[in-house]
Length: 315
Image (cartoon, rainbow, N blue to C red; front, top):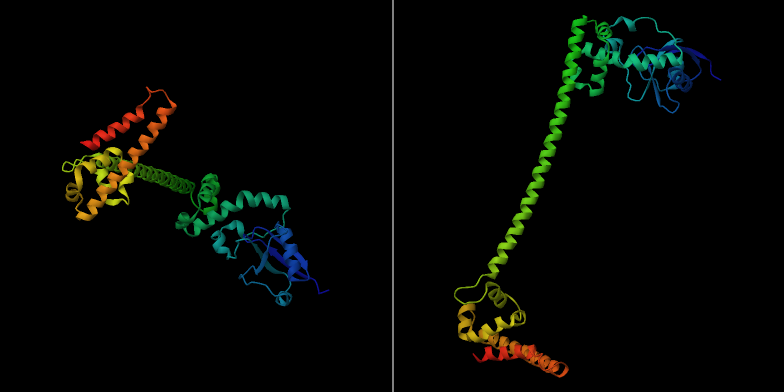
């Protein structure tokens, strides 16, 4: 086993310092971490307390003189000289002593946080803008006399500082509320725009339907009928009996002028409409015949429909 080496360790705030006797750098990390209250699974780094030199090599550790003071860091902690931690306050210049674990936890949790924040402000008051809401609230909640003592301020000035910190907190809260209101407003506007766009689409569809129901003053056909005749394949199959009869009655010459087609194409359309109408007439007659055989003679509505179609064709 290597020779035992006496040394000292402290935490990053230098509030706790203890003496240890170890034989390696790894044992220093383990024993020092346990003594300073670090979690067993916490990764620990070692630096020289006086200048922050990182100690990673075991051989270098063993070459250092006895009673060298090390600083153990974990998490996001980093080394800083004394004047950057407390601005030269007297409470850190006194000799550190070893404390019981329970006492250290209590002191650290209740005082170390706000005192470190107070030290930051004393070193650079403009760092207020970099503090989180929780940190600002911590300083606001500290008794004014304690804060004044830590900063070396008169109590009146410390009270003014706490009032300023509270003002910063209030403004941040107002900013958050304003941002939330703005986001809510933008969502509402976007929703209204979507509803308006949907309504406009429905109105356009309604207008288009109304336009299709209009009757062309020149031809006498509905706009929809003309669209079917001009744009559909086999348009005769898409027209009603009345529309087919109108095409047949108008004749090829009239339909040629309306559709703007050549004579052959128009004649073929009129013939197709006439054939379609004749086919439908034959179907009606066949149904009427079957109905007459299976029902009473008085029920002859289908026959009447056939007679109506014949009468229209004869006109």
